Image 1 (cartoon, rainbow, N blue to C red):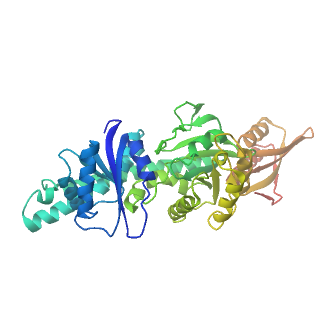
Image 2: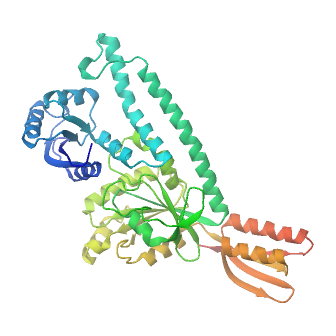
Image 3: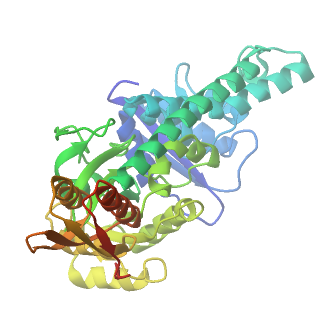
Length: 447
């Protein structure tokens, strides 16, 4: 759809509930639609129309009155329900359910190969049950195109399954390469921190505050950051793939990754399709769960629950909740919200990515929560190889003390355990080179 396509949004909730159309409105705008009307209904789902048939007649009248070219339904529609609703609408008016809309947005934002593959996988997983429905009806009723589902192609179902298998294999290959890259970064002394949370929570803006002036590219080459990187626009799904940049937190060398934002009520098949991107969160050393503090507390609670459901199933790292956009909340209201969410976010960090308020406090918290560093002492002979090792320690850890006595150099440093072990091996190499080196370990740990 082109920008500005007029659309009516509609939503059904179970009896007794109230329909919130704010998120579907934002999603429609993100996809380029102009919302010209809205409709909701509170009742049990109708098997044929999803809504009550009378409400669909009301929807049809609204479409005619507004001249809408599309109806966007904030629910998951079955293939027959989609057809039945479309049969009552004026000819040419498209019926789009929630997940079709999300896939449309993803398709618009997918630039990198991995993102494109994940979108294609999600689309195929969405289409597969519809192809299976066509096959079932065609075999049962011997009427191709029954219920307006389209002509039945006996090979289509198998084609979809074959494409899904092919894409999964390619994504697995990409995931293997990315896991290798993560381990290489850890071996180089970097801690990996991931930004997670709902779309539009301000993750990209916060990333700009924490990041240094360098971006880490796909090949680990550092180059000047470009304006389009980690965009901070006020729209949903600005970040579809992942962006990794070096962050300034203090003594630790941190790589910060911004990932695709969550959306409520995502089905399992859609989350699974983006598993490769979510691996950046699942395999991090620390996760910053960013929440928009300016939203109503009930909405914040619902989003925290959804994020926890997604993260805690596979996540291996500690999670720190970050209440962002505090520049939009007065202190008393912020305190009330923090107290109300204490069970879900017992010790949050409050920041404003926009103004920079308390970003330094967040940097301190990152260092506190990252995996322990080991403290180590190396006594090395004066040599070119020793000086190279000392330089390497500055690049891969935090050197706290460096002393020279004419014949030897004592270096005291902190680093990831893997870096400490590599430093000891390098010191042993110096010794086998005939210079002689001793390594002392004081057994200390650092948070």
